[in-house]
Structures are given as C-alpha cells and as structure tokens.
Image (cartoon, helix red, strand yellow):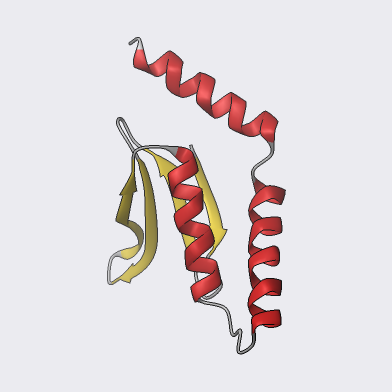
Length: 100
C-alpha cells in the first residue's frame, strides 16, 4: 500500500512495510526524487492519528474557532481518502501477507 497525502504543508507518503506503516517525506536528490521514512507506526489507526495531528499543527489557526475548523478539515480530508471499504481491503491484505 502506498498513498500520497498532504500534511498541510507538503506531500507525504503513507506506505505499509513488512511489520509497520511508514510515513515518508519527499526528498529531492541529485539522482532524483525519493521517499524517505521519517516515522513508523504499528497500526494504521496510529498512522492516521499522527497524520491528523501533523495536519492540525501545520494549520494557520490563530483562534479556537480556526483550530476547530482545522481539525474538522483534517478529519474530513482523511475520511475522504480512507473509506471503510479501503481500510478493510488493506487489513485483509495485511492479514493475508502475515500467513506467508
């Protein structure tokens, strides 16, 4: 699984590894563009919670009302990308790979 998302300032990549989920940042090198892992999570919900916090931290909120709006926008963005059907498919895929 590899999903490109936005953290409020930059594109980030959420991908599944053999034993964890990685949040990667885009790095431009002389030889090209690469995604480097910066955080690892044991579960998909933990990765999404961290991305939600990152999106809120990167917001321009200056009042409590703006903060509330930033939280609601971040939640809506993630829910738009990550539907229950998609979550189920990834969970099943991870379970299938566990037995190999």
